[in-house]
Length: 101
Image 1 (tube, rainbow, N blue to C red):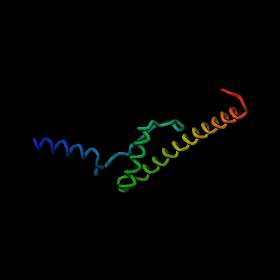
Image 2 (cartoon, rainbow, N blue to C red; image 1 turned 45 degrees about the vertical axis):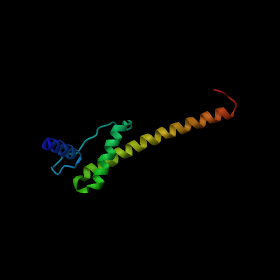
Image 3 (cartoon, rainbow, N blue to C red; image 1 turned 90 degrees about the vertical axis):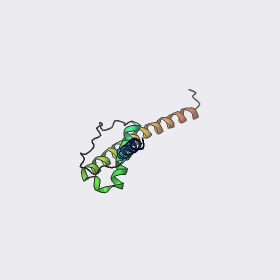
Image 4 (tube, one colour; image 1 turned 90 degrees about the horizontal axis):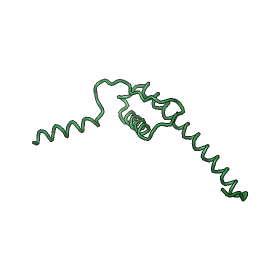
């Protein structure tokens, strides 16, 4: 019983440990300007943190892909925040001018 438990425990630990074998570059596909879901964003953030902690495991292409993906998402969210800010200003101005919704 202890051997079976150890096997499953060791297998579970290895699933979260970085692999020493050669890997292919992970590809996260999305169209520029499209929002990513929370899970996709967390995946990109996790890959970025792993690359920062284990620099030997990430190559230049992976760094560039991460930077491009994060920049794209930052631009998307900045545009969305600008739209929300504009709507809030318009709603506030309408409320101040006496027009009720």
